[in-house]
Image (cartoon, rainbow, N blue to C red; front, top):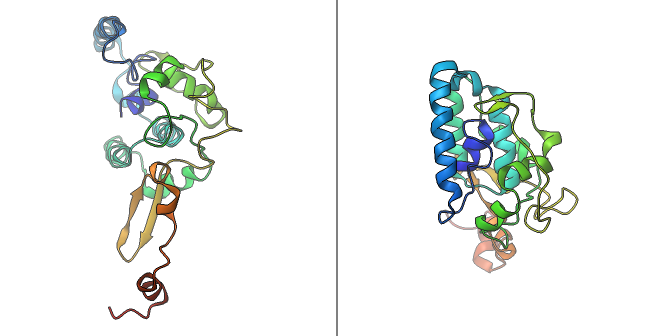
Length: 210
């Protein structure tokens, strides 16, 4: 969600992934404090930053990062407060065109500390720039900041993704008529295939006594 805040344009660039032990936290805190005072006097206000483009970009970044299912709940709620319509269907559609590029746990091999060293959120946004609205306002100025990644094994190219589709999937059915969200990129491949036991076959063919 810190990455979401950065993509939405509510933080300074690079704020989301600073490891706890680094002195960069202190510098970022001081810079953020100065910016907060300036914003209070001169703006922009959050309502001027959180438009439909910001939310669409946040959805795209969550999927490329292999982010949390909680992001779905929070983004939909925030968008509604901003007067922007955002639904599970929007996440589902975006997931089919946005690859997972951040090779970080639990869906990948590296830590968020490695992600930060590779360039953090600005580097991830550089990889997916063609899918973003880079002309929208942020609290730091016009457009989200992007930069070349420092490590292609942590933040991958679009032609070498961790997964060809986004890290979240929307499921529908009689168990979840309103929809459900899973983070399938973090699951072992065997968990994404139906079991082949006779009992399971009965369930799938409808012969089990419900």
